[in-house]
Amino acid sequence: MSAMRPPASGATKTCPHCKSTILGSASVCPACRHHLRFIPTGQLEPTPAFSALRVEAAFGNPQASSYCEYSVVVAMRNERGEEIARHVVNVGALVPGEQRHCVLSVDVFTPADDNTRAVRREH
Image (tube, rainbow, N blue to C red; front, top):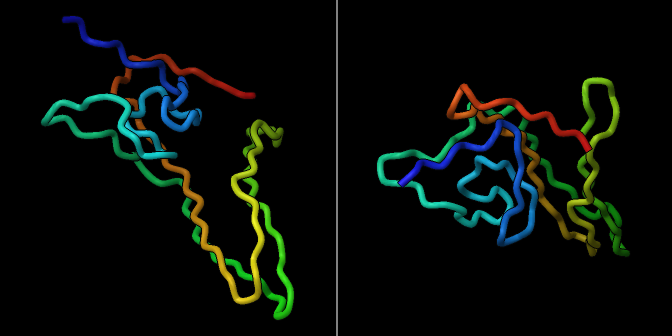
């Protein structure tokens, strides 16, 4: 039986469950949390080397008598300030007294194999 070659660092694939674009090295989809491949006993699932950013926030309807609407948007920029990705994560409405909580995190992973070649992808 031949061992599978690890994907190039930064390569992406589509989750077969939720169709999100995820890292090719992921064994669990970070969006839907479905397992994507078998991990033999004794091997650990890749864990982030560090968390570069984590922001938790709550927002609510400041009006006492009517509803308000919201949009949650995430945008990524490269080192030159050019927007490379922009996604609407959620939209909705809040009635008076209703709240939403959100968490934004950026987890950084170290490739398991230092010999993998880096792939740079910008949209």
